[in-house]
Image (cartoon, rainbow over the protein chains, first blue to last red):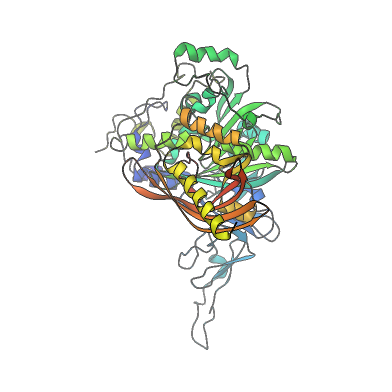
Length: 427
Length: 156
């Protein structure tokens, strides 16, 4: 479908550098529907889950690509498969369970049966009953299977796509981002369970959040209140992948005393040296990677955020739920060779992240404040200028460069090209 | 002690616990636990699969106090107005250790004045006599409401 066939529902991006974002992208149903077509069913690979969640043939998990229900599973040979969870007959969801193991999947409505690859093999009364006609003579089971998706994994992360043309997964991730994923997924992992968080705000506000190192020590006061994290820490902030839609923020452990003075000098509300943790065991950092970093936050557009915070390891899945809602599914993991002490530390550091996390509970509060703030003014824009005059400066946390790169790429992917920018006022 | 008297004491402990949370007396909350305690909030889906990933996991009273200090001084969240409702107490007692289970419901009321079911699930508690009163050695909060709305700041 040519992109131009979809009318632009708003006046467009007033600048082409990703620094002015019209708020309609967070509220418009038309834009949301266009994202479903051009992003989630378009030339992208969406994260579905971990291979470690479905280790055995027949293991399956229900999930989503955008709004579309999909199932990831393994066939009898152990190969990964993914298909749209919608019966080819009348559209009912075939798989009704969140997880399980099954060699075949039957639609309860009329008992059409599919194998784990999504191929149709059973249709009741295919040849009719007692001499009465069944399905027409030209009905072919092989042409009526479930909608199969291209599926692949990288380092144990499972992705699928509707696209026949998007480049292979490893190329889509790209060598730079792949290297950072390899940093975490360098040996067999052990799946430790999921937690889920629902936010009444647009899914892209969460992507902005995980591309925004500027907010980290200003919104999340746990860091600074307990003297954990300083904006002067060394960092890598790099974009990658198609249109720069993926990115990494790596915060590298550094001498904390150097930057404490910077907060005091600027009288930032965050700085309060009066508190210390009675039980600091939560902040242990067992070195287990070549590059010792306290935070590794890496969105792989559109549905994955790889996270290492201290020794807490999570693959976060980002699922849009309408223009004004998203769900996060936190897939916790460790390594198969964790000893008891390290595994215990990973569980303890779950306190840092997720819906009750000391250094994350404010994120959804912030994205919801934006959603409520922008509700009525789709033509107004945000101001994303931090670090704009120094585009080569990737070693600081005081930057909004990753967000600008993201929006410029989003605009391209969505076909909101320069022709639709300022001046092409809608209605 | 008869079961009936013990039951009354356990009900009183539960009432005190939920009042502590519902009246924002958070500083008193850690004091209802022994020093070497476990407090955990974990989704039913993980519990059922034998998987350990929690949303909160504290293995000392000091960690509980840290959470209160952090909530009071560091973390930012919408003001929470919880009402806890607890029912279905069942327990067994042996050698001064009581294993008790109950169901809970938490209604949260927003600043806009809307009350919603925020979370429901079950408590699995181990309580002991400590310092002249009943305290929690372990309180495991196993929630059914797998989608946590926005955030979970205040304990359940």
